[in-house]
Length: 116
Image (cartoon, rainbow, N blue to C red; front, side):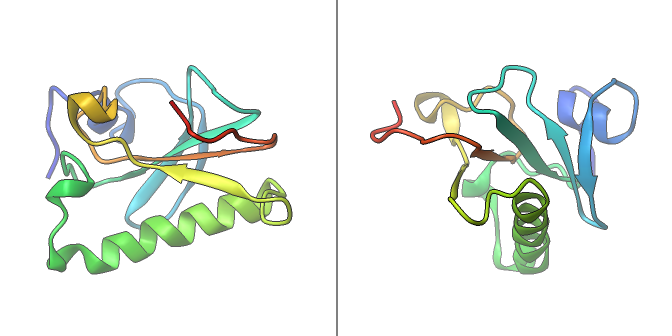
């Protein structure tokens, strides 16, 4: 299911340009337009789900697909040795700006804590 007003659904449908970093059957990965680290990739399910909070037990396979793509990208970009961060913002107070589930993959430098 897609949402015609969703920017990520439009990117997944190739109706809007994006710099793709990877893809599998259920997810795509694109480079973030406003990177917060040398490696900043968004991993996005092709199915329109508003946020991680909306995930149900029926999405177990999709979540595995998200994690598998994150692991693959982290290895391809040599982040698996020194480490990396994954983040999913949920809702306005969580910093979510696009209402379509996506996971930020950040790495390539020392990341600080607390994040913000």
